[in-house]
Amino acid sequence: MQLTTDVVDHIAVITPMAEALDAGNAKAFRNAMAPVLNVYARVALDLSGIGFVDSSGCGVLLSCLKRTNQAGGDLKLFSVQKPVRAMFELIRLHRIMDILNNRQEAIRAFD
Amino acid sequence: MRENEQAASENSGRHGETIVLDGTYGNLGRFREFVREACRGRGPNGPNPERIEEIILAVNEAVVNIMRHALAERIGEPVTLGVHVAGRTLTVTLEDKGLPFDRAGVAAPCFDGSRESGFGIFIIEQLADRVAYQQRSEGGNRLQLTFNW
Image 1 (tube, helix red, strand yellow):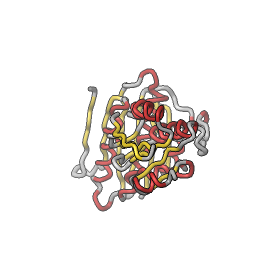
Image 2 (cartoon, helix red, strand yellow; image 1 turned 45 degrees about the horizontal axis):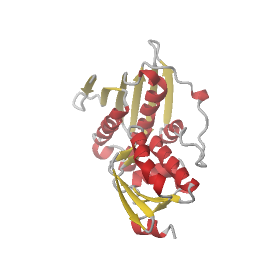
Image 3 (cartoon, chains in turn blue, green; image 1 turned 90 degrees about the vertical axis):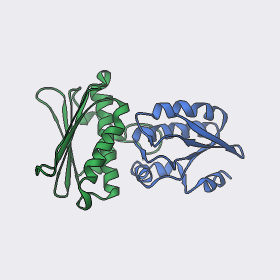
């Protein structure tokens, strides 16, 4: 999966180039994120283009969160579409992962 | 690609549609789109957009479970997805020829972030109003999910 990476104040702002994060591309997302997570512990993930996330997609987000936490950082999500937010709430992901309204809020949340 | 789509019609009075697709992850989007179109086809009498997304998510999870656990090493074998609408109820029937499903063997989900999987059945049972599973006499599984709105 293609990602665009923008670095602001040592925070990697990542935008996945996909419309869904599901069992079909979760592994590709994990592989694409690996080099980012090798370098950056603070990661903000732009989900504005993702209209569907299933449990496999949530699983790979949890995996990325663990990696950043282990490195002393964090993974924050922003611009989450309504159906995706509903999915996160269903499995309580919003309780263990910060979800911000937009890019600016996500970057500020690392302060 | 093995594929057989039978679009039924409102004209015939039968509000049902069936699709048979290879059980591959690459087809997940097509399964979802089929359900979305079936829901939207009900027009204003159909489920609202939020309910449509819930139905799609539940069906997606069920299809993934079939691929991962029922088809397993035989992933790619066909999965049949039928959608039937009656009034304000949509029934999805999924059939495969894979290994039998054992609900009792499914662990409860863990919400503290320590596990990255194990949410599929929970999601299905949270979003569907009724979940009925049976082993087919000819082998394989039949899962019926009922959604009201």
